[in-house]
Image 1 (cartoon, rainbow, N blue to C red):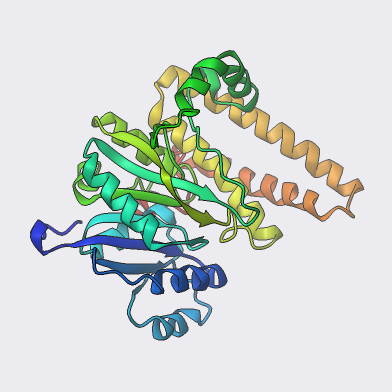
Image 2 (image 1 turned 180 degrees about the vertical axis):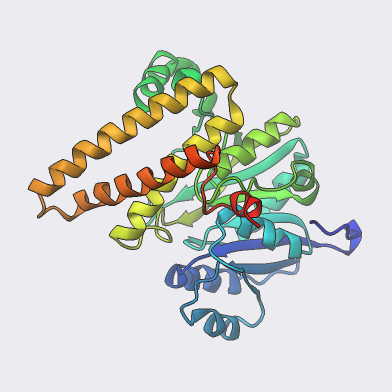
Length: 336
């Protein structure tokens, strides 16, 4: 899947952006990249459009003719889009970037220099800041048996507060969470090849957690540098309306099921999958019934759509004996 290009012939960085109808955010992102002028490093920009099919692909391809635009065969998910872009990349390092981010030369240079100075780091990210100048928390821990659900996760953090503060509240240039968000992921070609890229069991969400888990399995570290930051408008490219919001929130739950099936032993899987199903269906049924009486609150409608989506998903999972989302490429490949 990945080119065996001679290392000396490679560019320094391939910036890979996966887009699906997030054109306004993507426009701002590409403007920020277009303004980067440097003689100290070489980079290319690859935009994989997951078949937005809204007429904008050709417009952007012409407007940003210096960048590479690739149209995917369908809305095949974030993992598939990232792997598709990586398969075309000419860089020695990959920067996977969300379209709702803005990049600076400083961030690009620091990410590259840090990765080169610390070859033990498999995945590197940086600080992220939103439009309100608030930094995102990046003290992420892998989902585990004792902290998989919200209440148990909160209790775990409370009981281990001192230990976690010592781990994350240092003043060091680098700190080491278990995983980092897929919005900003810097990884060398060699590390990417070693873990065989993104897992296409996932259509959307948790693929970044899975990617970081794979890095740790092969002896790599996951790190965040405090030396630079990237603007990130969280959720700006995915939750466009009530229907889209219901779809993306449903996929969060589906991806939890996929993660459990990929990362836990059979006995623990049975427990976590059962609790997740019962809890989600009970919550969404209650909120759906509530929405019939409080119909004047539009946000509650999302729960009715989610309940419908989940009913279809669980029926499909039972029928096909797989937790993989029907939208994910690894599911679709089994149907070819």
